[in-house]
Length: 313
Image (tube, rainbow, N blue to C red; front, side, top):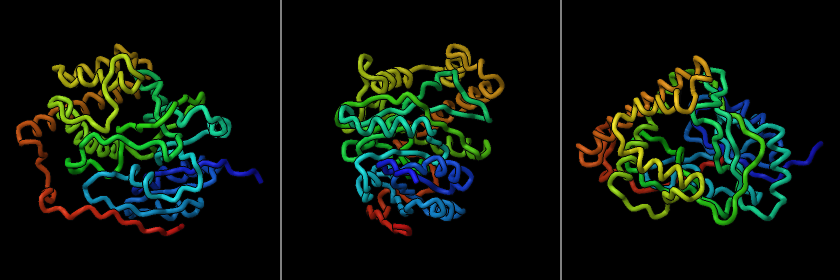
């Protein structure tokens, strides 16, 4: 029997029975797997435990930290290195072989992993979707997700999605990709991006109003890839006709048309997503910074009280 790789895997989850088995199967080389669940009502927990994962329940009450940062601060990881993987992602054997090698190298405290995004069964290789670098492998005591001050917006979920990891020390880049493919239907894609657009609208408003950026990765045209992307976003939020521009950028300028029908549909959905962000931004601007949703007002919300229920530790 091969020895396990000394890496602790962190998986944020909620109702992921369609994706979870394939994800966990790809993670078996890891020494330890934590699945941090948000009260799933399907077979998520049963599947996780069948693959030997340690299940922890997370209850979010509307205040920072969200799920990943809370997990990094509170879980009793047995290993120095943590690998963060979403349920719709897979780590390939080639990536595991490379991870085994790099964690023995003391030169870096973290590594970016490139991600191949699949949509309607096709790898979306163009339209700016590849390369898609994500800082997912790092020494857990050295990294935390930035806080973009969006937790006051309801219906965005309890998990960091587009926030980046702020890491102490040098970072590297793995040669082999991980795979991203959601086995659920388009309904779930649309539902997820409806929530994401709430989050993005708040980020846009923060950029437009110059809200305090302490604790975040700054915008810098001459910085690293994340800082350059953040700088371009400060310009993007001020442009007119963003839904149309988003489609033109993805489908024509960045050659999304080369991905065929899947690329066209993906580009149209991104344009629609941009429109959703825009109208929600308008709602925020005209309502004094709050979205009109059926939600307990912040002034009457319960105080922060993160709870842990360990069912397999």
